[in-house]
Length: 216
Image 1: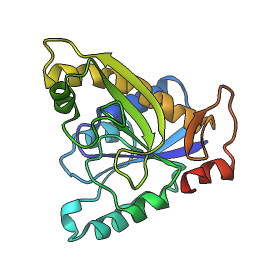
Image 2 (image 1 turned 135 degrees about the horizontal axis):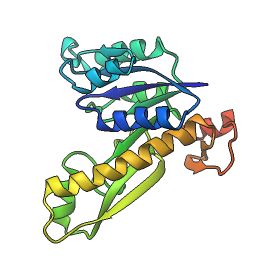
Image 3 (image 1 turned 135 degrees about the vertical axis):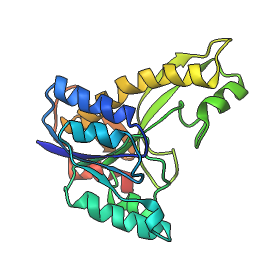
Image 4 (image 1 turned 90 degrees about the horizontal axis):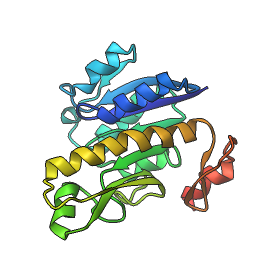
């Protein structure tokens, strides 16, 4: 059985989708904790209702990003997770923190990377006039929103779309592909080969070499 820790900053809708999929599909996984940098993150309440430890590490309590990341890492490592899942965690992580979890930290970004990195992705998409938008699951690296891509999903951009309507349709798809990607990792089917994310059809245990491919 694998262990995961989920990081959130708000309502944690992707976190809820992950928990629901893990329960309904009976994943061989323990969701050891949900951690937020904000005490008012409503997703913490949902985690607690599911019997999952809900922990706050307030970023405002630390004067530097390094100090916060060090404290956050200490709390995460208490649970010795096989996988760290970012689910709407609105903090830019330091290279040292990212390196510590290299090959075992996933994020979902609301665009078809490498397009529209950073914030306000739906506004960026509408301003660019693209006809297809979507979301990307990727391994986290020190380059913001540029890690190896695990999976992507797309939606059509409609003529009358607003940021809100487009975001809602993308989010529905996020709730599908993110649990799928995490399940692939948990089952040993997702690995890194020479810095490229690969998903095998059959369950296999990832080798040390494949995990270390991200570091090459």
